[in-house]
Length: 229
Image (cartoon, rainbow, N blue to C red):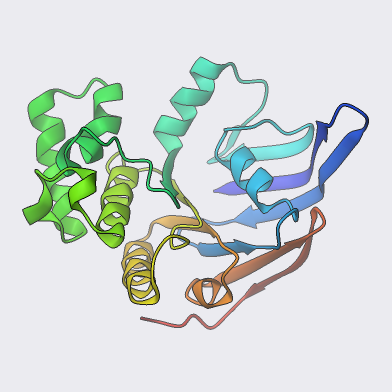
């Protein structure tokens, strides 16, 4: 599903180059539930941005579902993101003046799906995350956990190959974190590939594989006994 070989990435700081990723090798198969951990500056956010086609590698190989991801213009990059990837963010990234239903349906709007069909599918995904009764509510009328459930429904509605979750529980309390991770486990058990970037060991323990970055390299990569919620 996802193949990364000898991946390097540097940033020009003005006075020198900061070498952030220093030869990453990582294969993730379809249906895996993987956490990527590391302290600030370890390279985990840079790696996620490259996987999410939000940034470009300097060198190495990145194949997504058999397609080489390189030398893409923004139109093609946006097309691949829409086709292959769903995103969940710590800050939810919901549009404040749109209802939960409209927020979930938004990716289908950009795929030119007719309004009736996209609203029907959005309701199906709101039901999947347990928020049918909140469909007409605005984000400021929802709790943090409800907002994240809306964001997860939005990430799933295009049936992406991979869901990328960047600190999805970072703004949530412990009980809500438990609920969101249980939802992600259920989604993974249905066969969806999920990659979670987190700094929380207890969140990583609820995935099936832990990849730990340190100073731009993979320090460890191991399958674990998942804590099932």
